Image 1 (cartoon, one colour):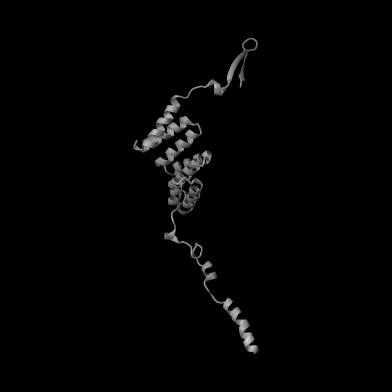
Image 2 (cartoon, one colour):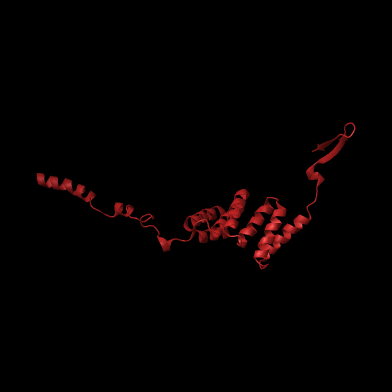
Length: 187
């Protein structure tokens, strides 16, 4: 009877020591979680990001682009995509910084130039934006209607830059003695 009791108490202990694959999978040299996707099964972060941008899911697109950066490194495609997502999210300073980095990586990448121009226009930097759009237009050889339209808009805005006294406030000049004047503003 004692041997039966001893045998019954040892069975659970022995089964706990049995290798079922649970821990051994964690010790493998694979960087992926057990049972997770590997290599070819993964979907490229850039592709997912582009799909999210098309769907209007800019925050999710940005996360996918960051995953793409981890997969591909800081390529011009990745940096330009991250800058575009930042632009759509209204993060103009971040978008400008990232797009300038993209242009440093590849000075002939037209989408980065165009998107930088859009960011500059949004920030009110019309003169610089028109130069950036001219560069994009030249690199594209004038093939893109979108870039042509952006350049035309920037140049029109640059030509029509007028002084608006209502926005700037009213100024008056007051004489104070011989050859001294004081400029006053009234808001």
